[in-house]
Length: 226
Ligand SMILES: C[S@@+](CC[C@H](N)C(=O)[O-])C[C@H]1O[C@@H](n2cnc3c(N)ncnc32)[C@H](O)[C@@H]1O
Image 1 (cartoon, rainbow, N blue to C red):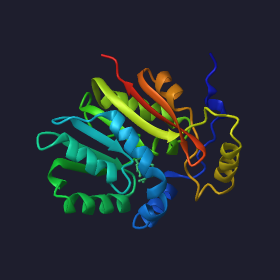
Image 2 (cartoon, rainbow, N blue to C red):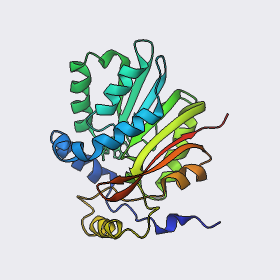
Image 3 (cartoon, rainbow, N blue to C red):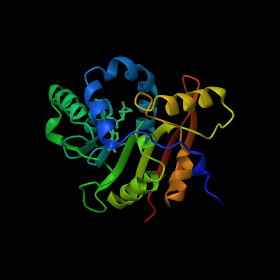
C-alpha cells in the first residue's frame, strides 16, 4: 500500500535555525506553549505508565516538566535521560530538576536525536511530546529506527503529536497554511502518527485521537516486539 506520507508537509527550516529559535524562547516557552500542551503531554505520560526502577528517555524535553515527572516515577533506583537540540532548553530543565532535588537521577544531552549517543537496548520506555512532528518527513522513519535501536525488547514508545488523520478539518488546513507561510514561527506540522509507528515496525498498544484546541492530535503507545 502506498504510504500516506507524501501528503505530509516538509520542515522548511534548518536544524541550526530550530536550535537558535528554541534557545531564544526557552525562558518564555512555558508562558505561551505550556498551557496549550500540558493537558496532552500529561495524558500521554499517564498512558506510558513509567514504573519504579525503569530506565527511560525523553526526546525533545523542552523546559523539563515531563522529565521531572519521569524522574519521580522511576524513583531512586531508576534513571531518566533527556536529549534536546537546544542548550537553552537544557539549562531551563536542569534548573527545574535541581530545584526538585532530582538532578542526580537524570542525565541530559544537547544533541540532535537523529543520532543518539546511547547503546542498543538501553531503555524501558521512550517519551516524545510535541517533538516527533518537528522532524522532517524523510527523518521520521530514521528517528523511529533510532528509537527502536535504543529500546529494550518489549520497550514502549509513547508519542503525543499533531495528527494529519483528520484530513477534512478546516482548522488543520489553515494551520498547515501558516506552517508553509511562517516556517520560522510555526514549526510543528501534522503527521500520521500511528501509521509512522506501524511502518517503523512497532506494535500498536494504544491509540487515541484528541483535539488540541480544535486541531487533531494523536496519543499513541507502541511496543518494540521482542
Ligand atoms: C515543541 S517543543 C516541546 C517540548 C516538550 N516536549 C513539551 O511538550 O513541552 C519541541 C522540543 O524539541 C526540541 N527539538 C527540536 N528538534 C530536535 C531534534 N532534532 N533533536 C532533539 N530535540 C529537538 C526543541 O529544542 C524543543 O525543546
